[in-house]
Image (spheres, helix red, strand yellow):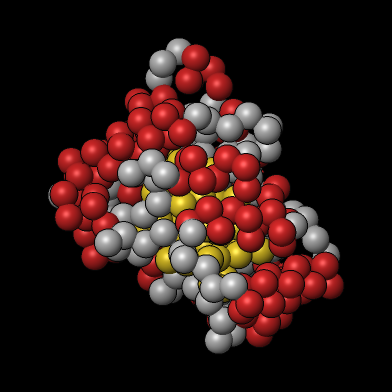
Length: 252
Ligand code: PEP
């Protein structure tokens, strides 16, 4: 049985005090009402060490939103995978479309980041997804297939076991426009097929594939009901405890 996961991506929101308050609120909400899925919050670097203390011993996992493509050294302003791991975090988001689009993260750079994250014992939430023009041209499978092949196909099956995929159609991120449950299922089934082609059926059956893009309490249940959708990567709705909890509850 593959893992069901709801992961939040705080992006560049919340100061340290606000982040700690949100983590504490979520901790209380999930202690009072246990989730039926894994729950992860991915925060800015500055929150990690303190949020790690808040969520220690709870059901809540912790992740960063990025890490460097270099091991260590003179890379001012960067944060390495080893540094992320040392905060107590267990996950890192890599390949988010905002990193690809605004910070020029190529497949090659992402390959380095994935290798360093895995080598340092982090689980990777690896994002893939097409932009609107690609979807309108019917090229979404080609684009997503290449994103998978170009950054992940050199991994071993053992390494792949620490990868979670997040299909995030770029046109649905932060826009209020959600993919339909059918569009999500079509793509997730395609992704599982691509993974099966490279790593085999067993690996494809056990990898979790999350949907991301304007997911909210009102649409999560329908999207999560699809057989190849194993949960969600949540942006905006992860910033309010009640909304995030509402999405977590979609697994009940
Ligand atoms: C995201 O950026 O990962 C995301 C899914 O954002 P939103 O939920 O706000 O669309």
